[in-house]
Length: 417
Image (cartoon, rainbow, N blue to C red; front, side):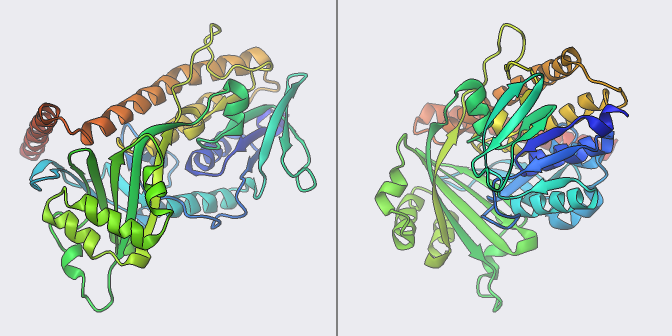
C-alpha cells in the first residue's frame, strides 16, 4: 500500500485555508484525510465580510489550479478598487475589476469549498474543539476538549489551520494574540425593494467597488457586494484599548451615534452612508488583533516539535489585520505550496521522519516568511491610512497618485499591444 492510502493527515480548522488544503491533498492522492472543526456546523456563526482573491500571485491562482473557478465564479464578482482622500473624496488610486481578481463573501466561499470536500469524500468532523496534542513514537495524538464526543486521534501529520486563536500554535510556540492598535465600527446597508436607496448602490464611488478612504486618525473601508445587494462599511480608529466597546457596550444606537461622530471627519458620501444605515443594521465593533511573526529555530524550522510532524497554515501561521487585503491570499497560497510538496511523497510505501521533516522545512521557509512580510506590511498600511500627520499624508497621497498613473499607463499600453 502507498502513503496515499495509509498516511493519516489531520487538518485542524475548516475555514478556506483548511478546506482548500484538504482538496489539494485529496487531488494529490491522499485518501486518509480528516478535518476537525470547532464550530457546530458550516452555518454556525457569522463568517466575516469579504475576501478578495487574486491571480497569478494570490489565492485565486490556487482556485484555478484546482479547477474550481467556474463553479466559484457564480458566488463571486470582479470588483474595482479605489483609494480616496477621506477629506476631499478625490480618487488617489483606481484599479478596474478584471479576470485576475474576484471578491467573495467569506461564508459563501467557505460553504462552496465545504461542498467540494463533501463531493470528494473528505471527512469533516464538526463540533470538535481541539485541546492539545501529544507526540509519541513518531505519531501525533490529538486530544479534544469533549472526550466523550471525540476520542483521541492518532495521526502521521497534524496541520493547524485553526485561526488566530489556534491551540496548536499556542502549544508549539507559546505566542499570544496581540492588539494591533485599531478599533472599528461596522454597518450594513441592504438594497430596498422599493428602490428608495438605489442612488447609493448606483453611485460611481460605490457601484461594484471596494473603497479605502483615509482620514486623520480614522479610516473608512466600504464595499458593494453586487451579488447580495449590500453595502457594508467600517470606520476604524487608532486605539490600543477596546475603546469602541467600552463607549457603546455593543448597543446599536450608541454605535450608530459614534459612527455619525467619526464620519464628520470625511467627505459627504461617507457621512451619508452612515446616516442612511438603519440602526438595526449596525453590525459590530471590533478590536483588530494579530500575531507577531513566527521565529525561526536554529534547525531551520518554524514549527518545532519532538516528532517534527506538525505545521501551521493560514491565520494560525500568520494572522494579520485587514489593511492589505492579503490574509486570504496568503492562506490559500500556503495551502497550495504545502499540498504540492506533500504530493511528492504520495506514491511511496513509507514516509520517514527525515522525509516529512524536509518537506515541512521547505514549506515553512517559503511560506512563513511571506506571511510575516504581510503581517508587517498590514501594520504599516494601517498606520499609514490612519495617520494624523500632514506630511505623512501628503507623501502617502502622492505615492498613490504615482501608482495610479502607472496603472493607467499599463492599461493603455496593454490595449495598444
